[in-house]
Length: 158
View 1 (tube, rainbow, N blue to C red):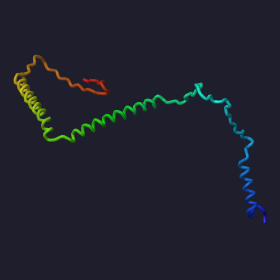
View 2 (view 1 turned 135 degrees about the vertical axis):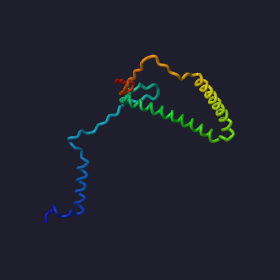
View 3 (view 1 turned 90 degrees about the vertical axis):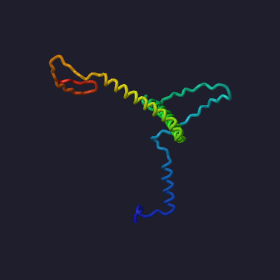
View 4 (view 1 turned 45 degrees about the vertical axis):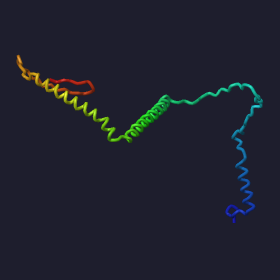
């Protein structure tokens, strides 16, 4: 029986496991060793500390800043509209029949007066208007076709 196919004993398995673990934790000669540095300068106990530059490397595109500002504005506007709607609905919830009549009857009376005045004005205008047409020359009739293409752009074909 060959040594490659036989199972390992407990002692051999322990030795092999230790070898694998130790080889895994050995540093690779091609990888440089990690280094660290600690500044030995003592920190002052009190007094002003010199400023340390902390450059800002963030880049925010202008469209993103615009979207952020617009979303804040839309949120504030919607909140105001919602509060207004809530106040109106709170007022409508406390409406009685007497208050509805008190508000709408004067408006209905004013509308009736305006309709009556309009009817009188229309009757006076139609009574005084002359409907006879007298033409003093030859009549020439043309047929014009208008083709609308775009906003404000049209052509007339005769």
